[in-house]
Image (tube, rainbow, N blue to C red; front, side):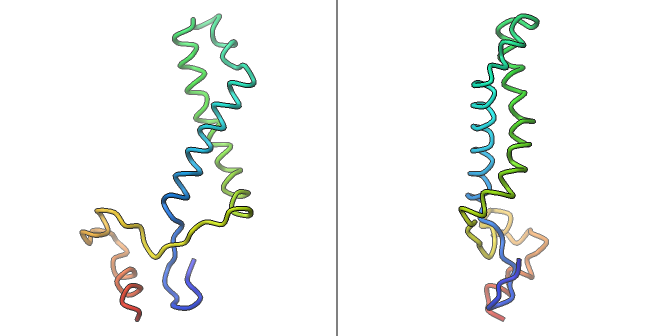
Length: 108
């Protein structure tokens, strides 16, 4: 998404994205816990492997929840937009969009 004032590329904050993923994982585990899915796996797999199977079932459920959350959560809590992600790859100049960030940071 370009900025309306300086026409530089804006990105969604990494913290916002990570918070959505963690929230989706927690909601998936809570949903599986409340729906008592683990009792379906315990008789056939036993308690240790049944617990792991119910835990790993949370990942696809979290993915489905995340696809819904990405479309609905920004309506109530808009994301923070940043010029670039500050990480070791971008500060070393190894990113492929280095020219875009240099132009955006210099104000040209």
